[in-house]
Image (cartoon, rainbow, N blue to C red; front, side):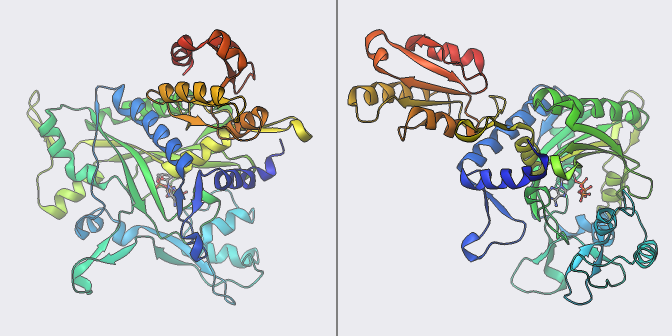
Length: 458
Ligand code: ATP
């Protein structure tokens, strides 16, 4: 498959089949916000389940919380976001469209990672390379633009009622860390996981789900003794690789590590590596960051709140703020990476098929049931009984439109791994065909063995 139009195909499939819809579409859409449709919702829940299984359920040193979106505005002062969570923008001087300066510089091929450039350096590069806006117009000087989304809570709208939507989801974890420590009676090292919303006023938004203004982050914050941080940092790096290759079943060739350059790191990080995924024509792009945050967050929150957040180690009689190793992935990017990874096209002309070769654990529907002919009540009735039994244990689709070949293709496109067809032979010998999405084989098996057969494959 040509790689240069994969994004377009995925966007179209997502919309056509009800994975992802643009938000507020009847009002002309609302930039960079999306709704998950029925199939996208099922896929989302399955991805979250896989993430939770890997990061929480299968470990005995990680627990999960769900924090509120609204938090005291002090949190964002302490975290450094009010002062420092800013991207650099430049403005088209004719039409006043705004752009991320680092992205324009990277896209123009001037340098690869422009994230850490100072305002002066950006101005110098724009001048030196005669860089213009994408519409060909001159650009303004670079300036900082804070990404926090602000609103007011309460009856008056003044400085005193400003609140910020979460700029990164993880802050609840730092605030709750001591409560979790005490209520779960843990000892270091241990981790707190969370899947939570984050909001960023991104200057430029493009590439579908890759950069949105509202998204979920999937975090593990691992608390440890300062001297153990390098060891756990390495362990979590290995863990993330295994998560993507073993749990998500991504091809390792589509993944790579990239270390942040010194001036590119976020203000809280002492070491930072990104897991990058190859989004076909877009190239390798970040899907998760692994950061050594040191004790920055607990130090700041102790200072701003006046509370003692330190850990007491009874064995050594020491009190200290632990170091934190952070793994922070974005759900929307993981969803998009999953679509890129498993999207397949096969054959030509009439026999061309598009399918999602999703691992069965991720597939929205595990199985679909069809009566061979819709106008034969005895086939429909038999198929309905099988459908009703299967849906107790599996997400099951029903389809009686068109011919069986078309129904297979339709299920292939949404990644359903198995299709069960009830035909005339079923009425004679209680067998059905179970068609496999990937091999297209259709073994006949007895109805009473169907549950076991599927359980063995799913
Ligand atoms: P980028 O450099 O692409 O803006 P970032 O380095 O600011 O990302 P982090 O702050 O490390 O991102 O956030 C952790 C994860 O959250 C990212 O790896 C990404 O998966 C996700 N993420 C961040 N910003 C967005 C966004 N605007 N839309 C979707 N996901 C995002």
